[in-house]
Figure 1 (cartoon, rainbow, N blue to C red):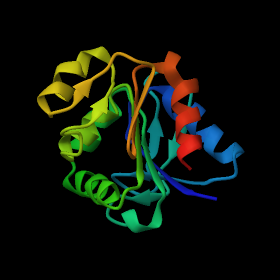
Figure 2: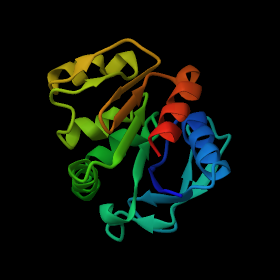
Figure 3: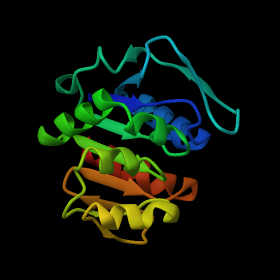
Figure 4: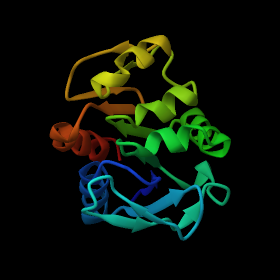
Length: 168
């Protein structure tokens, strides 16, 4: 089974964390929640779920994971300004690991400079950011381009989860 890292900070879209996280665990994959700090309580923006980071980004090693999942909401903005997070995503991509982002999750990928020449989708509000990063924006429920998986909004979660599980 695969080792799956969830990159998380406060203000994530509740269902975009809960549903993929539950699906990975139900499929038998090992999940780890990585935050800026270890042991931090991380709350969803709607307040329906809360998780505790199991590792800090400074403790995490991209070599240890088969996939990195980045839920959307406000959390990616907090993650993308952290140099260790950006380097972690860049290293995972260089190793060909699955990198999956939904909604605003691709913001972290943009900061890691891994979307140039890649087809992707996202929340429409960051569509131009994807294009400016050199990505071809597609308005589809899920876009898979090599090891990169992206989706737009919570309504796309079933397709997003399905493609992650297919890759693993």
